[in-house]
Length: 358
Image: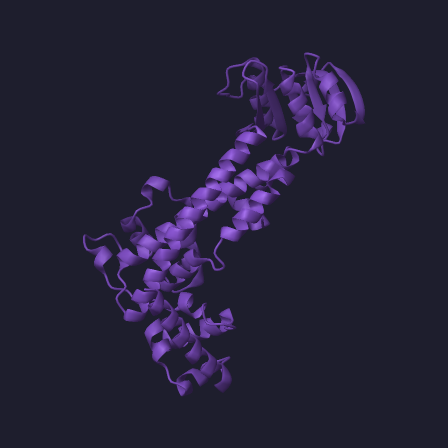
C-alpha cells in the first residue's frame, strides 16, 4: 500500500500512530494485557519536553519498555508516560494536569483528561476504559477506538466480498461503455453510471486499506487478496480525463478530488454531470458525448502515456484517432511508421474484442 493512499485515508501522523499500535507490536501487547485484566489506564506517548509542566507527581523511570513491565506499572492509579518512539517508560503513577478550560465531549474523568491533554499538546494519549473494556486513542483533536483483531478481520473479509461484487458490476459497465464509444452512442447517463461504480469501488478499497493499517503484519493476506481484485488501470481517472469538460490536467484532478470528498448520499448521476462541467439541466443525462480516447488507447499494447497524450492533443477525440490513416498517425510526435501500424492494428483488435463480448 502506497504512502499516497495512506495519506488519503488518514492524516500521516494518525497512520503512524495506528501502525505503532497494530497487533503484534509491543505497545499493543501491553495494552491488551491491561484490557484482559479488566483494568483502566491512562498513557501519554510524547517526548518529555513537549509535556513538561503538565505532568505532576509520580516517579521517573526512564527504563526500556516491555509489555510485562507496562502491565505491572499500569496497576497503579496514575498515568504512564512513554517516549515518543514508545521504546522507553519515562514516568509512572503520574498525575496529568491539562488546562481545565479546554472543552471536551467526554464524560469519564480518565477520558476527559486524555482528550484535554491531547488537544493541548498534540501528543498521543491512550485511555483504557475499565468499565467499557475499550482502548481509545486521542491525538490532537482526533479520537479513535481500537477494535479487536477478530472484529477487524471479519469486517475486512466482508469488505473483500463486497469489493469482488462491485468490481464485477464495474467491469460489466465498462464493457458496455466501451462498445457504446465505438458505436458513437455514449450519453452522460452512461458515463455517470460507470463513474459512480468506479468511485464506489475506490471507497470500498479505502475501507479495506484502513483495516490493513489497523491489522499491521496480520493484514498481509488481506492486502494480497485486495490487490488481486484491483483493476490494472485507474478507470476512474481515465473516465474523468475522457469526459471532463476541463481539458487541463489540474482541472481534471480537481474533479477527482471533489468526487473523493463527496458524501455517499450525494453520489448521483446529476451531481456527477455537474462535476464534469455539464451543468444540471433537466435533460443533462441525455446529452451525447464523445470520449477523448484515453481509456481505449490504454488498452493498446506497448503504447506509453506520452504518446497517448500526443494523439489526443492532435485528434481531440477517439473517432478521428480510430479512423486516422497510417500517414496521419505518422505525423504525430513520437510515432513513426512502425508504431503507427501498431496503433492502427491495436485499436482494431480492441474494437473486435469489445464487440465480440457484447
